[in-house]
Length: 255
Length: 278
Image (cartoon, rainbow over all chains, first blue to last red; front, side, top):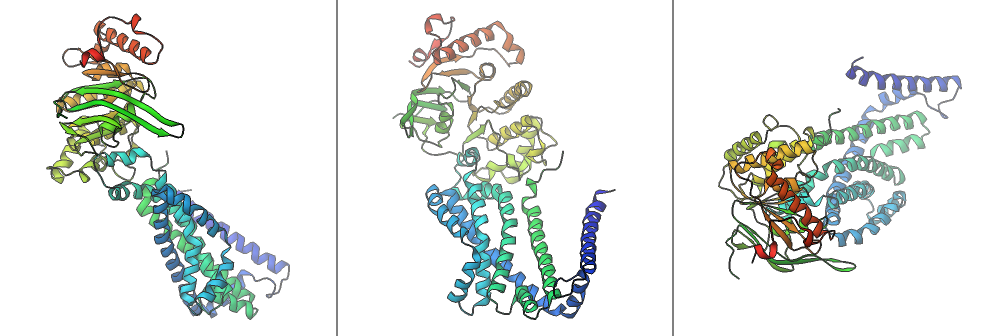
């Protein structure tokens, strides 16, 4: 079996198998719709609400990406400050750890009160708050563990600190940065949905999920879960794609 | 404060590191003189401050006392006329070998055009036996090949001083001897003044015009050996009676530096540093 064929065939077989098992389990146990939906129940929901799915997915998607974008800018900045200054690192680290320890579900109502009515802003803010930590930590570690020789080859020629950062420190940190970005994108996605569900305001897939819950439309809730999964996969592989372009050199060819 | 007639000169350099347990003196009135286009090797016991020496000469660090002169100018900060190579070849993984060699050209101002610099880089790579590897990534090369590329990078901008901090230390014996010969080829192609830090006495005798033995910490120049192997050196010369004799002297001096022998049981020949620099 060729490599490509296996890469396509293996996941397909497993997905179809799991769906079939699920369908059978619901049928065998004679579970009604309001207790457990089966895969065949989902298709009518997608057909009926396809326009809603598209609109809500877009709302969730752009707000997640905006939050992640902020997290990249802010996280990289904090990471740079912590990476270059030991004083800043020792001062900021406990604060960051403490902030990261707060369950973000508790922050949602506070943010909703502080910026009442600013739904898009609030959602982007939560996506950002939940996802910048791993980026800041990875950038600061990448910079602070730069071997002194790397600095010295440029410094001995009289290069400025900015040149050293731009030519060496930044590209050398990219693999760690993308590793953190993969974690951050999932977190940002969770943050967006948290806001949409905990503080309902009629936008995003979280709202569609909430509609399903209120109208006791169990299959719709499941359909939203699958849409969320699809969106999450899309976001994750978008990051993987960027990683291949910008940090592909870090991937060693086998053997 | 007269300027220096030498390419590299250290005058009474004293340096100490600040540590929690108080100052740790590493160099104690160390004086070294290296004429233009000559090759000096510095040997000494472990931890005697050899790497500190490279950081002082390259201007990455300033000594507490004393002066460092390069090309009759007092060194106070890093200078683009210096080339450096370390035990770790520190090639940038995201660049090809050619781009790695060209790195210094992006920092220093040079009369060479981009095309000239690239032609020079290709020529140097060919000279060290890396023709055909220009577009490979560092991870595709062996340790010895990476070190060759690192040497090319250290001289691409035609520095007048080359500082080598144990560049061959991590290589296997055969690769190391290969690279020694490469160093002679490079010097024949274009002369430069070189300061080599090494642990390998055979390497110092094979490559250098003078071998400086540092004492234990805090280090001063304990002994200077003028290497008088005639003509273009080959590896066979290392087994000549004269070379064996010089190696014996150096080995003895290292033992003195380590405090395991005294000057009383010295092999003949050579001259103590104090006399040499009088």
